[in-house]
Image (spheres, rainbow, N blue to C red):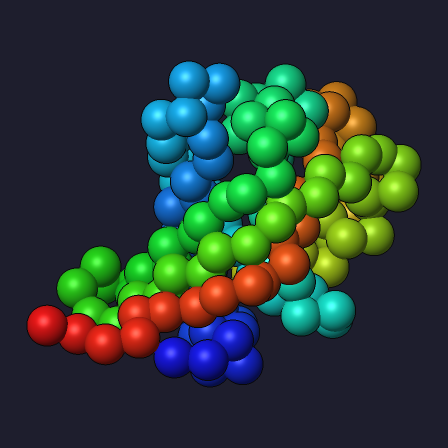
Amino acid sequence: MDIEQARAFLADHHRAVLITLRTDGRPQASPVMAAVDADGKVAISTRETAMKTRNARRDPRVSLCALSDGFVGPWVQVDGRAEIVPLPEAMQGLIDLYRRAAGEHPDWDDFRAAMDRERRVLLRIDIERAGPERSG
């Protein structure tokens, strides 16, 4: 699978597991909602205080496994480097992510207030590799 095929899959499948690396090198898995942004990067909303945020800030190498809605079926894994975008710069990206993954919010002012209150950040993954490349 090439990177464009992975992006196409992620445009329609938002349930995923993000893998970051703990300080001892072991993987830490986090269920997330993900979408591909206008720049072709994978976008994820998370909190400033979340372990996945701390892990990605320390070591930006991450992997994401996106699954079909029914769990069994096609899936994709992307590997890349994460960047953490804090508020207030992240707000428009958080709004875009919500629209791509869930549609229109009933109250955008309430959404913005929740993002501030929860200290949300935008985690963006620059995709370097995608798979699976073969099945067996």
